[in-house]
Length: 368
Image (cartoon, rainbow, N blue to C red; front, top):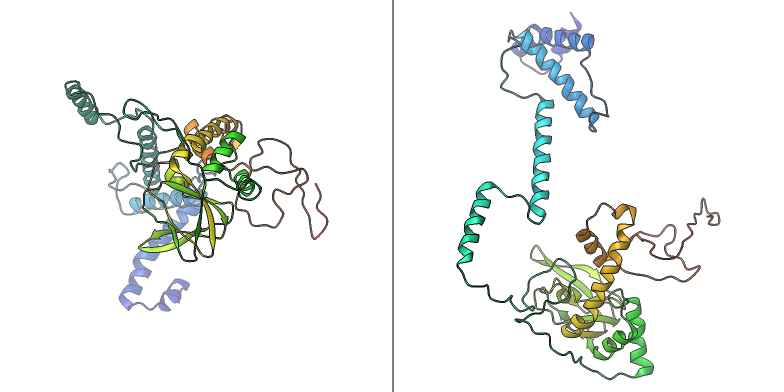
């Protein structure tokens, strides 16, 4: 008994299928395998395609398909109704590149539009010429999210009024000093001048919350932010119909600022988990003092980020978004910024000064 028949006899197939394997399938496979081994179809290298294993498989399969076509008597000149795996892969890659190019054009100001849309736009522009001037923009307190920190727009529809911040007297030796200390550690307020900081301190209103009390509600209009002095409130978001904790706050943290920065509704709810003391800052004071300072800080950071290698390929808009998310921290000489072995939750970009990198191997003392 041949080795092929012995192998087939051990298969759990019917006798009819075993005969088909031996008499029809096996001879064809032997010829195809022999041709593949003898001619060794050209294999792409990693230079041609990153997914090298897949490319080699496609090339071999394409060769085997051609062999089967010849064995079946199909002429080489006959048109094929099926694309090879490699051809299909090439077509999909071209489509993907076209889609990426279209998305980039659509995302850019004045991006390309289909011809029919351009014609519609021209018709709309002609109709607009006959219409009266548009009414002034809606009031700034409407809940539309903005893309970055920016100053309020003022014009005939929104006259800028003289600013008279609220004043909540504080004891200079206790409350005021505590607030200044907290503000200096918060990136939101760290860019304030001493004069602006004094205005903010005086405008902050103290508020106390009991355990379990809701401080702000997701979806509500926001007219103040909170700076935590004591307590550890939790930020919660409604996810799939269920409120889930997304962040645990600590003294010195700020929450509720997004609604003021972007004129949006509250992005999350915040609940007190223990006795909580917070300082509230109203929207108007924030807009006049803090947001303006944040905008200036963004203007200073964007040119700096352009000089950082990993951010050099970003455009100005993307760098401004990154600047909004960055928190400025100051460290004294010989103070550790990060420690070996700690979990990493942030990365740092050195704006000013110099750092020394130390590493300890196998329990030895850290070395530069």
